[in-house]
Amino acid sequence: MIVILKPKTPEARIEHLIGWLKSQGVGTHVSNGDIHTVIGLIGDTSRIDLDLLESLDIVEAAKRVSDSYKICNRKFHPEDTVIRVGDAAIGGGSFALIAGPCSVETEEQIVGVAKAVKAAGATMLRGGAFKPRTSPDSFQGLGAEGIRLLSLAKKETGLPIVTELMDISELPLFDDVDVIQIGARNMQNFELLKEMGKLHKPVLLKRGMANTLKELLMSAEYICAEGNEQVILCERGIRTFETATRNTLDLSCIPALHDMSHLPVVIDPSHATGVAAMVKPMACAATAAGTDGLMIEVHNDPAHALCDGPQSLTPEQFADVAAKCLKIREVMAE
Ligand code: PEP
Ligand code: MN
Image (cartoon, rainbow, N blue to C red; front, side, top):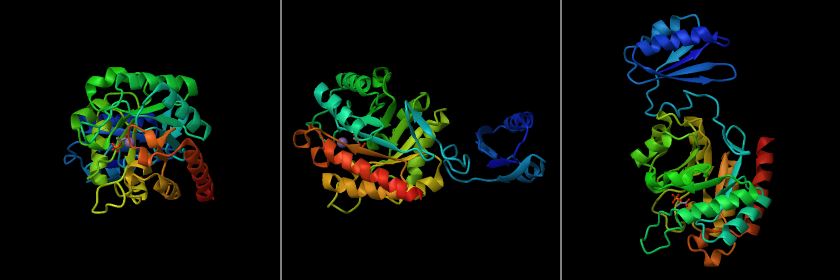
């Protein structure tokens, strides 16, 4: 259930109403917009009398919300969530360009790529240290050493870092990490999601390869419900019968998620297509469709990358994509 308050309702009256709602056994989530304050009710609201609420002089409207995700629901929080990461921001009109290699390999590689993508307009650096590889025989990432090298690249460039956490036992290594990525394969690792909810840092949650948008939002809800509402949703392609691309990029998720939720949306055209030449057209399309950010794999030497070389752009190619997407944003804003 949501309760939309009239503009300029005094704080004391809001507090009083919240106190009463809590006494009725429901949780509350307050969203302060420019004009309206919206109180979202969480839990069993069957005892709450809708007509009684609507009759209060401070209430503009009260509605039942049957969706299974509440805190990340647009109805609970009508305005876009803006997530700040260092000097960068994402959501509510702020665009994030997240770029870097699939995996951190060497100091020279990660620092070199970080400098190059920053010069091209990237606002955050990505790089995997703990890698979820389909085959146990593939390169598994540098682990703790990879995080150390990411920190070095951050120090050199000032770019905030985004890297994947696969197991909660690794968390103590992530102090200097700005955004924790939960990968597609862990989208429904509910215990891990609950742990992410206890943190005070943004989480980039990737859509599982066989999950619906509703399921993605319910996973985001696991994080929000523990108190961390800094969740970035990431579409990275879903598995379909098509084999010409690594996955199928669901671009319609952008308007759909913007309608369903207030959380920012990032598109990852690299994992979605698996083909470097397809990254630019899909990044451009996603930008035109209103994505809040892009996550793109960039490698100094894609042919010799230890992971995902075929989908990695060179820094020069990334600079071209970034410039085009920034131009597209200008056109779309007209
Ligand atoms: C990644 O971004 O490094 C990654 C492994 O992506 P996904 O979880 O989308 O496969
Ligand atoms: Mn990759």
